[in-house]
Image (cartoon, rainbow, N blue to C red; front, side, top):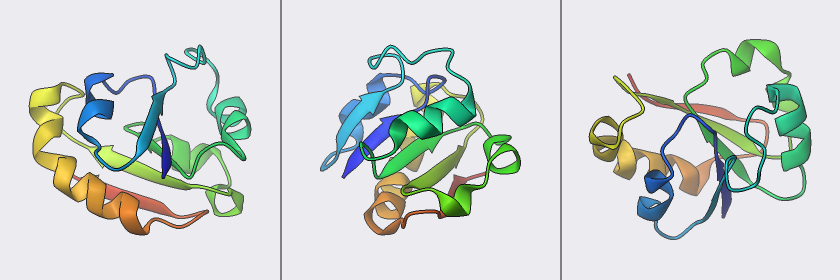
Length: 106
């Protein structure tokens, strides 16, 4: 699955999402792109967005998207707080559907 990590997630998270082709917003030079534009740029390129941006679900019509959104809830965006969630993130990515928002963590 092609996955995009939002810009506030550490690049190191990509390395532990085994079995997926993971890009980051930063590596795509999309840092600072507003949510609506980011979602448009993702169309046809990715099957999922992994983010910690809780406001995303209230700003956009996610049900119409051709990819899923995985909303990660953790104490911080540091790897020490994200690593315990990796098995749950991988499980959620395995079954996420287009237009679906899934929450993992707190």
